[in-house]
Amino acid sequence: GENVEQHPSTLSVQEGDSAVIKCTYSDSASNYFPWYKQELGKRPQLIIDIRSNVGEKKDQRIAVTLNKTAKHFSLHITETQPEDSAVYFCAAHNAGNMLTFGGGTRLMVKP
Amino acid sequence: SAVISQKPSRDICQRGTSLTIQCQVDSQVTMMFWYRQQPGQSLTLIATANQGSEATYESGFVIDKFPISRPNLTFSTLTVSNMSPEDSSIYLCSVVRRTSGGADTQYFGPGTRLTVL
Image (cartoon, rainbow over all chains, first blue to last red):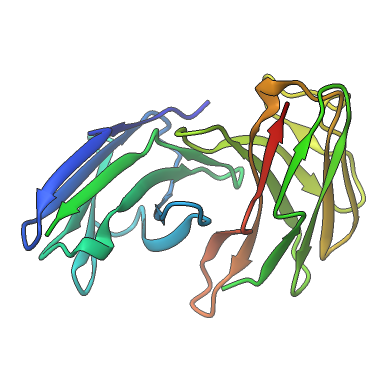
């Protein structure tokens, strides 16, 4: 089955700096890669996603890149703000409609 | 997005008892999923619940421990049976909804925080 590795597990940045979270996946058949943000005590919320026919996608301060050959994808947050502090999960989705999640990254943005 | 509600939002239970969690979606969906999130951990899929058929369980999860019902296309229940403290987790239901752009996207309910004493 699919295996998704996520790094780092914790990330601390200064407000205004950029943050990068990386994930690798094992199943070359996976074709959809969402990123979720989970604030303390809240449900995971989809923040951005990318499909296997695209190499990069951007939404304001958030961007995701995908390298299908290397089977890795990354989340980039620019100009970080304290409200970006949360746990971020990457996931890989295969044709069976199954999402496999990475272990999560706790991002802390220091004001 | 999908509007998903869960009941109860939290509960504290005694070991050996069972708890049934309800998940209601605002419109019909084919596939519903149940996840477990242990404290400080990622999300682990328990099972996929399809209407009109038996739920499909992931490795490490069995029907006797986590029976699931899916009586219609907007509702599902997950029961945590014969609970032990190790079952203390957040349980989340999730659905796949096709967006206006034609893409399937997965959304989560608010979760049920279960504490077993």
